[in-house]
Length: 310
View (cartoon, rainbow, N blue to C red):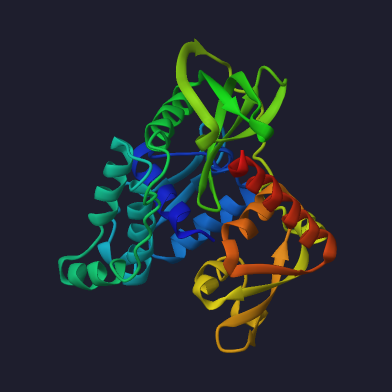
């Protein structure tokens, strides 16, 4: 049960007075049964919600009720503020500022300091140290296009450096593994596609308004597929690159080899990206096995040396 959804439902009921279960279910992309459970949880928390049956019926907070600011615990408010504050680093907007203000209004004066201390215990900053300076403005453009149902036009660089121009109906912004994407219906492919923002250039929001389709979120869980493709290779590294190797595996994969080196069972995929990772360690890393990966690395090093020889 998500606390942010419960808070949102309360805000909606305070603002719209009466809302149907199916309308709430569609709004939060959950089942009606989940909404009924949420309503029960809100009622158990002390907020009297009544159900009106028939045409025009739905849920509403009893008109004479005023919310007790103590209905949310310190942990509840800290979690909500932490999530909203971290999101505001990258996804800016008036509605986010308003939501933060509304949530802060629930904080009783005698708990303000305690909650501020808890919120500051964890900092989630989604903005990059360095990188593509277009990411932030692109997020704002895509966000606006999603809200206004307007088409996006851009040039996209896919694998192997192939460039194409795309016209897309945008439906969802996605942050996955520290990279931003957006999911939409591509007119050039006549299907849904996931686009990585760092590979986009010349992004424009067109004035054309589209009628939203029956949208289904993309499947972002590739655990089963990746487990079948992933293998382990054995590499020998110098301790000076240990911190970088730990980005891809844990200490349990390391076995000391003398005073300055380690043998590592390194998780590996047979693609250019992972060969590039190994090469990025330079002369501080040697692939021991399997032989075919070792030979491929040797070939790539030879090709690089040839460029500099010329």
